[in-house]
Image 1 (cartoon, rainbow, N blue to C red):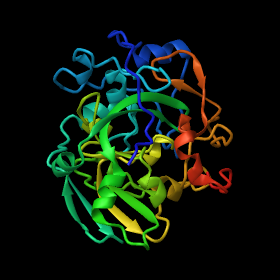
Image 2 (image 1 turned 90 degrees about the horizontal axis):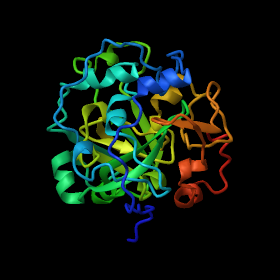
Image 3 (image 1 turned 60 degrees about the vertical axis):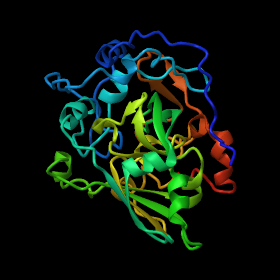
Length: 323
């Protein structure tokens, strides 16, 4: 089947120099931490004492690793920022606190249970899926509902490959995802404020779209725990909170599944959560965004710039009501 993924030209090489550190960026722009309440992307970190995680040389340090751009010509965000500026409430609500707290989180072996309205339910090891579905690099823009963004060179395979392998029945209309629930390893899951485990969902046609990825790595290397390893979902035309991390359960259903953020605040976080500059979040304007590592703001594009690939999925649907 012909891929609908917008292929990336790598004719230009991005300098290896890392972007301005995020802390310098914040200082320069005067960004301050916001309230943590009901924030799908979380507040900015304020703890300078957090130690850096121990790690070997990052993939971005490899020759040519930084020569990546998206199809619009925008360079990939630095490996440092991608791996150290994360929303991951299972570990902490502090973006810069995730990486050190996730440093010892074990992401291998990792299995995903696929169940529900499928002909071949079962447990699938990530290693098995990597061999079977042959991951590739996909350079996607990531847009957070808090109005910041990144460009990330994911390594992964289309979710559709796994779904076709388990043979969905005709009754399957939605796909439900669930994160690992393990409070001993995810200290944030001890918080009673959130309805753990983290849950997300897609319509089956969204899940089968070629852009929808199950990511097993980034920047040519393994997927760090801080970014959702052992395996995570990536849906580039939706706000980042739809791209659930540390997936252990995938269930096909005939009813729209509950999601964590829409359960907490349905007036702020809808099921669809398509990037839409014309529909503001109650606390964050969606007309523009700041790319991490840049000082200027960018104009946000409908569907995060992937309208050509996905707008047809929503023909006839009022996206102001179905936000």
